[in-house]
Length: 100
Image 1 (tube, one colour):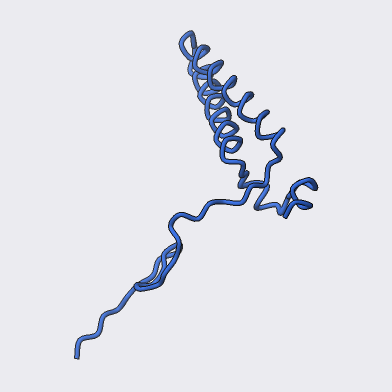
Image 2 (tube, one colour):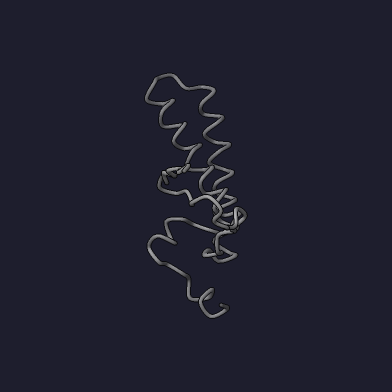
């Protein structure tokens, strides 16, 4: 008799379980906020990159890398229309609640 032990790690499914790998997160950011996030995010990325070229200290480099990372976060969440923090907090703007 051949028995196989399947260990399951968090975030995985058991063998043979069907699930959708292409799940798209729900939109929880209004169109105006999405636009603002993309514009401010791109501005932060550009500003951080330009400042990084002239960085004179380790602290300046760290702060500019953080500025670029924050800009990337804003640009990406704005582009896809989903904010994981909003989702975790259960926040859905009133204008999006009415349309669902």
